[in-house]
Length: 208
Image 1 (cartoon, rainbow, N blue to C red):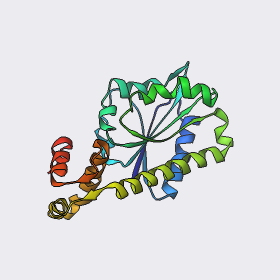
Image 2: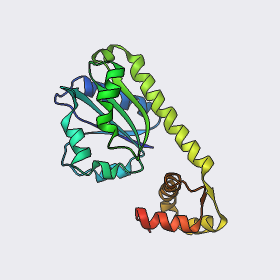
Image 3: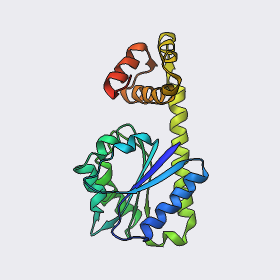
């Protein structure tokens, strides 16, 4: 399992980066391979496709989410490369949870309507002295991530014809394609994965 934390911050080694490091450590302890990358609005985010879980985090400056993360969603190709990704969100700011939920989180969520948002959290500046808040956030992310995998596995019914076609693929491609096909079927609301659905997923998403 691979996770990446995409973040923005004007300062180096500040509270936002400390939160990121704590979240990353929690994911590593749960068995994830974790990377982090500081956002640039015009960067190429095609590398995000290689990750199973994406965490987006940033501070709030003067009532607006940090500009490079927001810019990457609005003007860059981050939104495109987040398609069908499982996402968790966090912001660091001094506002209350209720205020932030109304004013700040929607600045990100409006661009993530088609994504599965596993968890979201507002961290106060004092979060570094409250390890429980960080630990609970990581636990929530992991719980929702595992729950989504189980839900997909339970709902994905493969026909015999689709299974035969899948088994004919090279073994090194099967894991990635199964995940892609099941996520596509879930997104489109298909109750059964048929050969036609596999071909549709392949043509829509790209592949062999």
